[in-house]
Image (cartoon, rainbow, N blue to C red; front, side, top):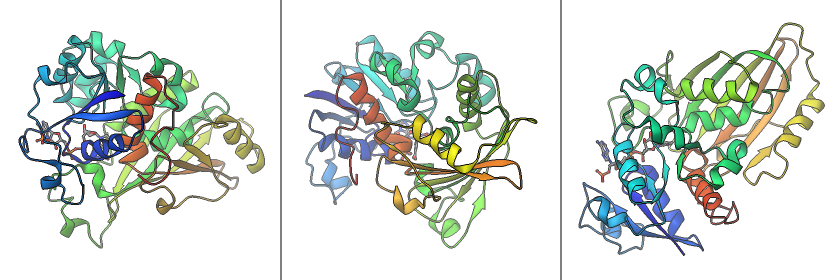
Length: 338
Ligand SMILES: NC(=O)c1ccc[n+]([C@@H]2O[C@H](COP(=O)([O-])OP(=O)(O)OC[C@H]3O[C@@H](n4cnc5c(N)ncnc54)[C@H](OP(=O)(O)O)[C@@H]3O)[C@@H](O)[C@H]2O)c1
């Protein structure tokens, strides 16, 4: 049995991770930490969960016997914990953004100088569909952001296949993407029966999208990204507009779909669809559904993708990464509704 710690286990992603691990046949959530609820039991904090485990205050000593730890802290709070865990030889899946970018990009995108460029260098970007082999041997996996997961799975089959000169990602997310502490803009009264865009220019996830897409394409492709807040709890639906370079030959829809089917052949969690998916098809699952479409009149390839932000966009993908790191079947404990 793999002994796992969830650090920050009462947040949205941490609580879901604890639940997924509890039902996992080869792993157990042996330590759950919380600073706000230390000493309280899971079933006191979440009455709907039958679990008498007590939350512990985080300190490095309590996790040193663990095989793996999932760090579910906000960005900038996660990297000191990851460093402490690595000093004790614990393998880590970090759900924050603290290890997703090259160290030199942190001042511009996250406003801080990364104190551990050596660990950033060691970390593997945890998108299994692209880095499966590197994840198997990794000691630090940087779990991707939720928006980049949906966007990259929509576009990666095109990178290196069709020259692109612009990608525009228009994504709509459920409110759980913002974590458990409501703000004036994510409060029920602001979100219910409403719809809005936010951080239209310079959202931090753009750095991840440009970096990963550029690496896959062998050259940088400009990305314009606009997130929107849907009055729903879970899920991200992205419509991604991809403009081929001038002179590139547009594939027909059958060739395009064949490319996607080939690219995702054998993938346990990506399903290529003929028709654009709805959020309800993926909510509470680790699946991503993508539908590539040809808009010949506009000279654009339009790809619609749908994921659950908390599952494929966070905790489910984190367990998929753990399965790879420990040589388990990749889909173990992740099939069906989570
Ligand atoms: N929500 C999503 O859809 C999603 C998707 C992908 C990635 N992520 C990333 O995953 C991480 C966790 O996200 P989440 O949605 O689970 O967040 P959350 O619901 O706000 O939970 C974060 C947890 O971290 C702990 N924490 C420790 N230091 C903190 C601090 N200084 N400020 C606030 N909380 C602190 C808190 O637990 P205690 O006080 O009990 O210790 C809190 O419950 C974030 O880095 C987020 O960007 C989230």
